[in-house]
Length: 106
Ligand SMILES: [Zn+2]
Ligand SMILES: [Zn+2]
Image (cartoon, rainbow, N blue to C red; front, side, top):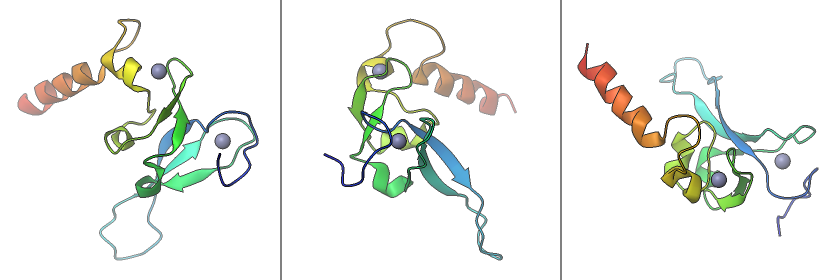
């Protein structure tokens, strides 16, 4: 089980949040953390440390383990949702294809 007590049952529900760097004269890279979005829970963890933690899927609500690839997503979801039951919303693949189009069109 987790080392710290959760304010809720089940795993945290992580969302990617960019914190503005407080250091003046730095490269201006935002500090990325994953925050639990469950009401009443103030848990957050640095991006490097979230890998391997359990999170709740934004799509199906199941628990899954965070991987490095998922730290690029704002609202991480589990593997079965990544593979995509064609429900609603574009898949990761669609989004990156659209990005390619956008970038190629400049
Ligand atoms: Zn939480
Ligand atoms: Zn899922």
